[in-house]
Image (tube, rainbow over all chains, first blue to last red; front, top):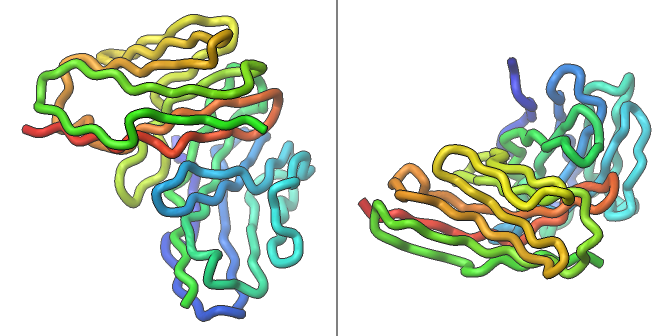
Length: 115
Length: 111
């Protein structure tokens, strides 16, 4: 069974440019998460989707970040414009549902460097 | 706001030793606690999940315990091997939310 797929794996852009990350969750997983991981830190939740609905986006900086999960399958996270402080690893995770017994399966992440 | 602390931040031990990683959290109202492993440049791999009603979980050489009332969990690794070298992350889930992670313990097993 394929795991969570993310692309691109690496991205280097100049500040003020737009950037987008793509995630395809494990087939059949209804819940999708985007996390941000800074160097030496644990991941921090940005947004959680239940099917196509964003049910928790309180930590998403909405002035420059946006996300969508059309048709409740794959998802895109966008930053426009990017700032130097956005350099980090962006992780996508999925789980069958959001219940207490459900572990989250993580993709390899997209490593972003903003110059 | 939930806060998760992991001690120690880094640990280096000779191969074969048993070791314990510690995790504490401030809000005991959790759904579950999970331990993950992260290799350099890679995503996270789930090791163990303990539901709030459980006290411990075991998988192979790994044993995780949970004391929800005191806000503590430990990950015990028996007979450590060089392949166990990685960063170990503790995370708690409160309600139907995403996970709140600690900063991790960077573990090195010396051959």
